[in-house]
Image (cartoon, rainbow, N blue to C red; front, side):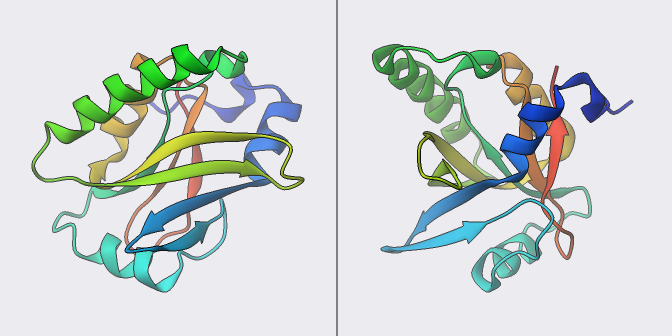
Length: 147
């Protein structure tokens, strides 16, 4: 059963909804936003996943439960997440970054292509994240609560 977004504070939901998720692909940046159509290249990638339940997700290990964490700890958490994501042969993983609209905050992340929603949420939970961003092929990116 999905966890309702109402579990999160309205201010936190607003922050997520106004974040730009910038993915580094082949030397250029592609921007993904919650509730907006996927950019062309991300839409094409999502279409190639080969299963009706898989799509793409933006996941981070930084700042557990949105608590500012020292950079060295965030880097170590991201390294563990990168290793975990690299173990799954069916996933394509790209460096990404969540950036607030005003540019005052950013957080390294990964875009994972070929992942199922339940798995993305589970990984988010394992890394103490409030939420992940998930989109099915042909769908809009949405905020998925993990706590």
